Image 1: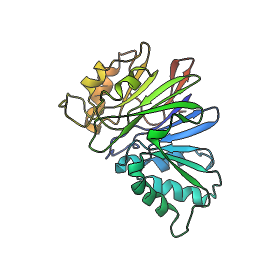
Image 2: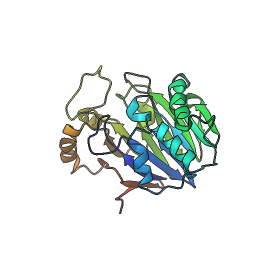
Image 3: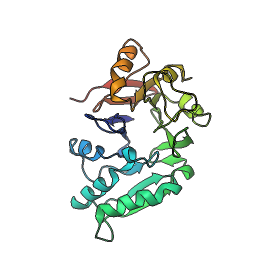
Image 4: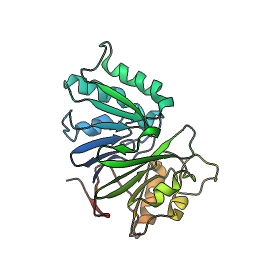
Length: 253
């Protein structure tokens, strides 16, 4: 599994890209979340407009989905033909579909078919086994767990870990956990924090990647994590790979 860190930024990130991952295994690519600053980051990668097979949305806050309009519009402009799978919570389809429709307006369709699938009903996505579980957030958020031939990944989306998604988190080889702030939040908060991240029960040998960190808290988390062998604070453009359950971190050249 190749994990391209498209962005790790918080909602109002002044310099970086909103949190998003581009995953690839056996030629199948899925983009997890697509905030407003994600499409330009994809263009900088010179991706073939046919490359991404599926989009997965953890939830419908603007910093996780507003880029859908621009992405659909760009693919229409590039004359994409490959069908696209959009995986999201059925209750949030209407908002996402409005964004999608605007991407090809005034045309009736973008020139390629779009299939909408309820994320709660899937147990596989491309080459991966798939599971979802809710976190504690201000709107319903479904964390995603994917397991392929080379290992497993957990991506929290937004929100504080709950009893529902802790088992998925605890079984993953690489864990991306939202970490809004460097100091402890209330147990009733709707976001993760750095002290909480450090206490998560994880699989032995797994790698924790705190992300979605507020700009004023990033330096503190990076400083604290610098000497932790099983913690990596990712930045935009980092590449991680899973092979036989072992992880490797690379930097984009």
